[in-house]
Length: 145
Image 1 (cartoon, rainbow, N blue to C red):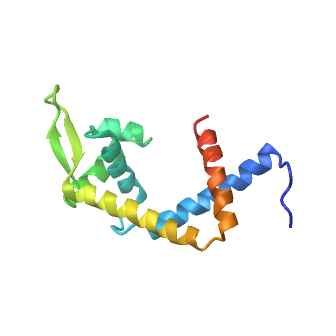
Image 2 (cartoon, one colour; image 1 turned 30 degrees about the vertical axis):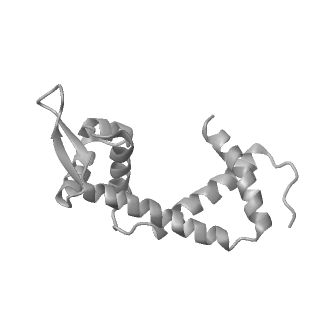
């Protein structure tokens, strides 16, 4: 079946949402060597990207209740993936930061995703890889709007 030469925005949005969702689910399934859940991996990623944060800051960033984030942080701390640090200006608050073990989990997770995706892309024919490469700037543009 030939693709529609000018698909409607609604149809394109539905197809792209499904395709991106499927790709993300597959990446998660293939690339979780630590067997942490999505919420735990999200908290580790936030700490890696943003540096030390309070429970409330992490909860806001991950769109969840502070109590739920507190449970996630407790489990990550128990696993030795994060540690508590004193807040620089407010002694009543605590920052959470990645430990070396937490950073290593993030590194392995990123590498596993990249390795799986590279293998999957290598199975595509050269024309399909070129088409996908040409679509990346467009996808980035859509993501930035």
